Image (tube, rainbow, N blue to C red):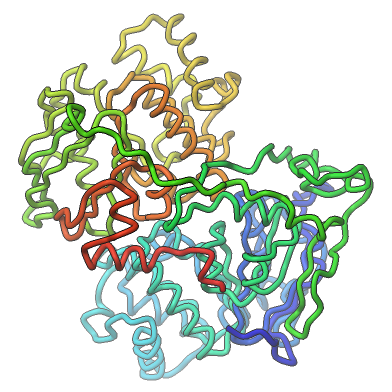
Length: 603
């Protein structure tokens, strides 16, 4: 990676501030950085840190109810924030482009891939059509997609998730912009596809001499991609430096906290989240924004706004941190201390509490699972891992009653389980509960959290209204939510709080088995750690048996007792988690481990 910048930066962001519309309450403020041609800056932080607000402001865009009130974004001598709407629209794509997180919502479902890419070039005035097609074929080749007529005639739904994301990335680079903002483009992708996409982003920025700003909540992903990393917290840029010095010598307590909560595929570590919570934006402290959560805080930290202190000077932009105590940050213990191997637990007679025998599943004529045999011990967490398309979610849905085109047998505690929730008895519905990946979509937006939790209590457990209301309070406390949240709606909760609410709803049925389907894949690392710690607590306290579906082997190391590796509908390796991850026997497992992001990628 480059360590010295070009003479002229491709983009200079200076004093950027975004306010709530009509109010002197800022979402982000004092944000300044430069990115050179071909360089990638990783912009990281938790949800609500302001990183996406900064990314979209670089295109002169803000969400409804907000406004850019100060600062500049200089690209090729043009301040985008001073342009009128018409000129700004014409410069987007030419000077700066945007790659969104969700390709499904970015691509028009009724237009062919070729047509959508042509529209991008036509809007930039690229003529004739032969020139547009030539550029489209070239960029598709660069992102390792077919570029023949047959592929250009496909619709988005005919592509895999990874292919859709590559098309969106191709659209971002096809105009050869000076700057491209990439907003979490690999969230939700399996580790192998993610590794391919990150490699392509790096190659495209280098070959096109395009400055990249990669927005993410995952420091491990950014560590292997970015030349430099900028860390945001509570609307402020709190640290910026080379990727290797951020991951090995963080100079801000928040950055060090993030490092401590990242799971490691190579080592089992304690599950911790960063202590404390972020106060509402209109209650932001006057001094250091991290003061209320900092172990090094002193009275002077709260007295006035904290400037950026120099950790290291250099032609590459140096290393700075918004902390008065940069010399003491390295003394803070990392939150996630290293743990030894898991203690071996006897397999008999507990094996077979959840028994899967000869499970097969299909979608119409396409066979997805073939001959799956798996014994899930009682009271343990068994992880199912694999790439997209491996069949892991289909397997989970068969057990959860959401997929009916299945064959074979499933038993819970020796009792057979019917395929399809509509055909299950009340006892079967209570025995197995499913927690979905997207908490926002799985909670009814028109119902309060209390109503969503009380429904299974009254329908499945046949409680009276008064009994259900009392149990809702207990359930919220069990998942570390304030009982007052019962009167709130899903939109009034953060992403992590919504996921905790869905866990509470599943617990309402008093299940014997929890099926967790990628429930942490879109969460911040600190929130992810708190959810994983919660699941571990529930397992230990209640003896729950869990089937944990994920593509992230670092999460598997943190939470699971056993792991089954699924590839093309077949289990290729299975056993205790430490045995499988420390000494993988199958090449597919080795490939998953190789592609799993770690902080060591930056070193």
